[in-house]
Amino acid sequence: MDLLCPCGRDTIRLRLPDDTDVYASAYPEPKAPADAIVLGAVREPVSGPGLRDALARRGPGDVVIVVSDITRPIPYAAFLPQLLAEIESAAVPRGDILLLVAAGMHRPSTPAERVEMFGPDAATRYRIEDHQAGNDAGLVELPGRSASGARIRLNRRFVEAGFRLVTGLVEPHFMAGFSGGRKAVLPGLAALDAIRNFHGAAFLSDPRARNGNLDGNPLHAEALSVARRAGVDFSLNIVLDGARRVTAAFAGGLEPAHDAACAFVRRCACRPVRREADVVVTSCGGYPLDATFYQCVKGLVACLPAVRPGGTIVAFGGCAEGVGSPAYADLMKRYTGRWREFLDDIRQPGVFTMDQWEFQMQTRALERVGEARLHFVTDGLRAETLATLSLTGHAVPPGGVGPAVQALLDRLLAGGAAAAALPEGPYGVPV
Image 1 (cartoon, rainbow, N blue to C red):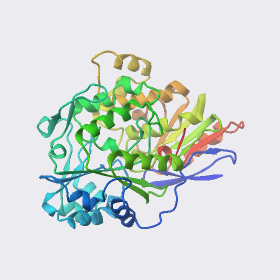
Image 2 (cartoon, rainbow, N blue to C red):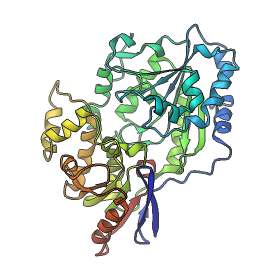
Image 3 (spheres, rainbow, N blue to C red):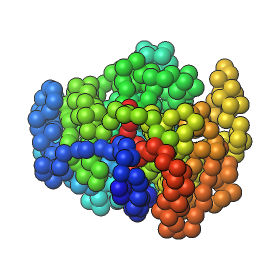
Image 4 (cartoon, helix red, strand yellow):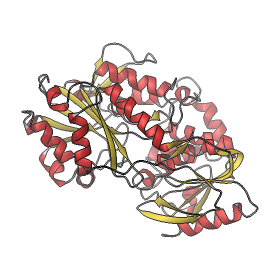
């Protein structure tokens, strides 16, 4: 069989045995353009009043619309102008509307990215701010504690808003079960210490923190407790198909709308494992998800239920923006080939390093197959950089990912090994 897989901004074609187990999403065809789907969702929500009626009861202050950053492929430009017009039609002055980017600990968005994400009209005619987790002056502490007993400090603009509308993409998430909903608040708008706690060693050591699972998932419980405490007036959850078109939207109350979106995604994108394969090949989702190796780790982890212990993983990604943050790159260098020592260190009281959670998730793959059998192919990183990432790296020239992955697969499958594939990476996963 032939499979088309995203890599960076391109697509590669892979040839695999006909009996390969393929884990891919199967979403229905969009029944309308993105703006019509979204407007239909906010006018006829899963629960509660429609958006215009909800806005009629807003308090004094801005209407804050929480949006995702460039690492999430939500096609805001395809529906945001119409959503903003719907809000303004509820007697909301344009000057009262703020687009707040739930950046978590990610870098701020650039002007060019804002145009790409939101379209030129929204990017130039509306106020846009990026959340800054380390800016204490921009945070407000709420009374009470989170599910884990942590302080709750959130973005001041969000807390003091007259109306809070959160948006997000719902897809399988390798830590929190599913993205979207409550994650717009934590980690999206939270303080640095809360985000560190959310990504801490204890939470990620829990086996229930995995793709497609919300039951007993400590990250889900933590994020939901914070979002409940903060208060969300309206939510909009977007679901994309394999071509990254809006195929469904679920709006209304924070929890009912997110629950409905998760149920839909679970049916369409989470496939039960039929057998554990000897060799699994996985995309890391294509751009923008695979722009850094940091994000590519999601692909390495998403495939784990489909590979046998001691099997082989072949992953690939664009990495056009490099490894990730300087702190993450330094962490990977310091612990190159010493991932077990890394786990011992981060489990010590008071020990925390920026971005350690991504390496901790990667160790799940290392525990299952080992460094020698964890392959990563990219044309975006040099060989000396790949050598610091605690895996078997394959640096190839521009455009060389497809041939290199195919050559690896031909060698690994030559003896009749059982194969599995995740052509979309973490967007269609085995459970």
